[in-house]
Amino acid sequence: MIHPPAMGGKTAWGVSRETVHRGTDDPEEIRKLKEAQGSFNAREEERLKRLHEMDKNASQILEERRQRKNSFDPTQVTKRGDVDAFRKQQEEALLKMQEIKEQKQAEKRQKKLLEKGEKKPKKEKKKKGKKDKKDKKKKKEKDKKKKKKQKKKKRKKSSSSSDSSDSSSSSSSSSDSSSS
Image (tube, rainbow, N blue to C red; front, side):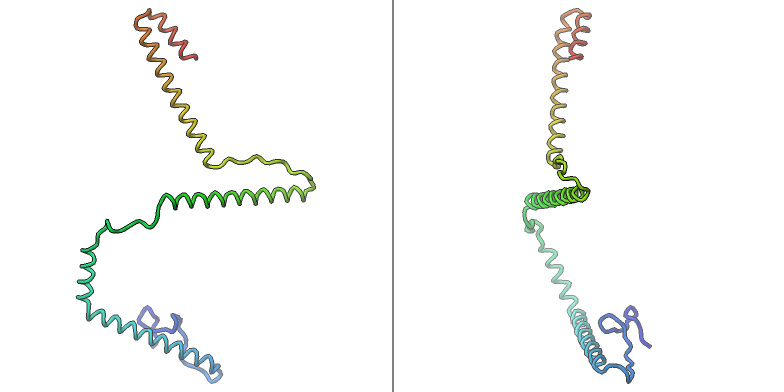
């Protein structure tokens, strides 16, 4: 009975084939199949011999692995290259890819416009890159923080000056500072 590889059966090149040949089969194909089966059997035999040797030397192999594990020093492991440089390189590549993509889209738009019959394509607004957007956000956040600090300073000044003056004048000065 022929068993599949999962049940311990052997196959040539990982594909099961019939080993029975008919008289009408091509002799060249039969020879190639036999060679393939022979080389597979040789590789299988080598693998089994290596496993048998490993079984004999199992205690020695375990001892070597224990020694390597005990002598391992994580501080000796170095990074493979500079992480920041790699990140910068990746960002540059992504920016180039985005520019190329935008160029292709612009070319497609121009081609469509020319096909429709328009002679002069409209000028496109240049899209701002991610860095420009990030810079703008940072700038806005800084401006907001400055404004908050200025308001706090004004409140402190007005509260310290209102302590010495009349309460009615302090309320009017605080409303003046909040309106400006």
